[in-house]
Each structure stands twice: as structure tokens, then as C-alpha cells.
Image: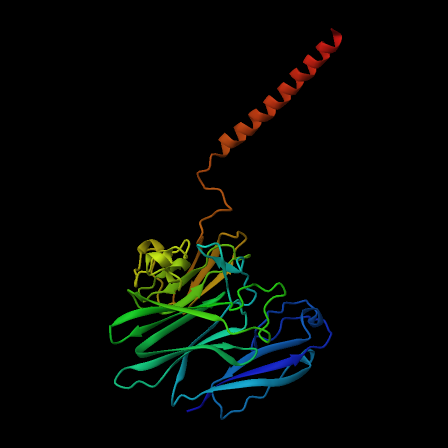
Length: 368
């Protein structure tokens, strides 16, 4: 069997204009759209790629506008000891409105907003129907491990999703015969936000918080909702074996959920820790319309900040919208438009009438 290898490259850009998007076979840590000058973005670009077979050495064919390409680092995973079952990285161009979480004592816990993080889940070969799950959090610019977590006595399926400063993953715990949702959150150890943006080369090791929850159903896949400005609270869309898509609000799987009354004083706006996350039919986006053999769920921002578009594809196709923080930038369908128009029209008439009466009164006073 071959070896799965992650390889990171660095390209020094040449000052030309792109007439078409960059090739899709490369996964860039920074999104570059067309048309844009590479010199305006950065003089150096870094990206990574994975190869499933080490015996076939890949030939790197780069477009002329990438200039000189150098290999920076390489990480290998041998299937004899572990195999990759899931990977996730934050969506390119993801925007975050809040740089930190406000605590009960009015202090701020700043998020570790590293756009270059890659979460990799691996499983060891099964022994007596159980394996060991390892979660690697890799900085794709330096090739270093930000965090590493292991869970023993687990089984597939494994799903993983990441956004902002957190990583959420699921697995089947064989000892207790239940499905687990675990979250890892990273916070800035310096206790402040940078005005110049994040740099992997100058960043420090973050503060890590972890928490686990029991889930009542098998998780087949996870996707994070996205909006234009990142103001709306993010939800994780969980694909269920029944063909449903469940929206899980962010506070439900927050690693800072308080476990006692003293911790609740600092965790403002978070529900008290409950080891069980139930499946509520109110959070199923497709209601009774089951989607057969879901292959993936794609999310995209809409024209409204409060709303995200959700598209599920498989044997069936399903398109809907979700508003995690309610539709705060949109009027309700039953809004009294006629009442509002009548009120505004009455105010205009009243203003014109009163202005004429006031002018007539001033004129009469001058003649006295």
C-alpha cells in the first residue's frame, strides 16, 4: 500500500495580471480571484497538496505566473499505522465579525484566527473491531502541529468540520456504544488581537480548550454555514442516515459551556453543559422530505447577511435557506405595509398643514 503524503510549496509570484482563476488542483491557503495582480496580494504564495501513493512521485507543473517553486515541508502518513479518513479546512475568504468572546468580568478572550489551519483525522487498522482515532491540527504554512488529540476504542464513520477558531468532529465510541461530538477551540495566548492580521510565522502557540458531547444519531457529514460578513451566528449542518440535514447552533457545541455555577458567571450567553445533544425535529431543514444517499452539502452566502443558502446533492437534489440568527435584516411576510404607508402619508399631510398654519399666524402677527 502507498503512503499518503502532504507536501507544502512556496511560489514567488511574478508581476503579471491573471486572466483566469488559478488551477483547481492546488489548494491555496489564501484565495486569489481573477482579475487581480499577484504583486498586489503578496510576493509569496504558499499552498499544500496531498498524494495518496508515495511510489508515484508527483511532477509539479506550475503555470508561468507562479514563478519559482520551492518545497517547504512534508508530512507522511503510512496506512500500516494509520489512514486518513477525513480532512477539513476553513473556507477560503471566510470572514469573522467578532475577534473575541466577552466574559462575565468584562474581559475579552481573543480567538486564535489562523486561516492556515488544516484538520486531519486518521484511524489505525481495526483490531477486534476497534481502532484509535487521531486528530491532527496542522499549520499549513510552517508544517507544524498546533494540536494533537487521540481517542481509543472507536469506530467509523468520522466526520470533521472547522471554522474560525474551532474544530468539530464526530466518531462512534465503541465502549459506551454511542456517537460522540468533540470540539477543540483555540484562543490567542497573547491576550490581544493584531491590527495587521494573522501571520503563521509570527504567531505563538494558542490556548486550547476541549469538550465532548454525546449525540443520539450517526453523523455522516458536517458543513458550516457561511454569510457575507460573518455577523450571523454559524450553524453546523449535520447529515443524518435518515436523509435529514440537522442544523446545530454554535452554543450547543461550545467548549466553554459552563459545568458549574461559578463557571457560568464567566460564560455569558452560553447554556449550562449537558453531555447529551438531542436531535430535534425542529432543526431538520428538509422536514419530512428525506434526501437519499447524500454525497455532500454545499453552503453559500446569500444577498442577506442573515441568510445562508444550502444545497444538498445525492440521488436527490435539495435547495433551501437557513437564518441561524433569525431574519433580522428582512421584514416579516405579515408585516403591515398598508398601515405603515398610511401612517407616513398622514404625517406628511399633518406636517404640510401645520407649516401653512404657522406661516399664516406669523403673517397676521406682523400686521398687528
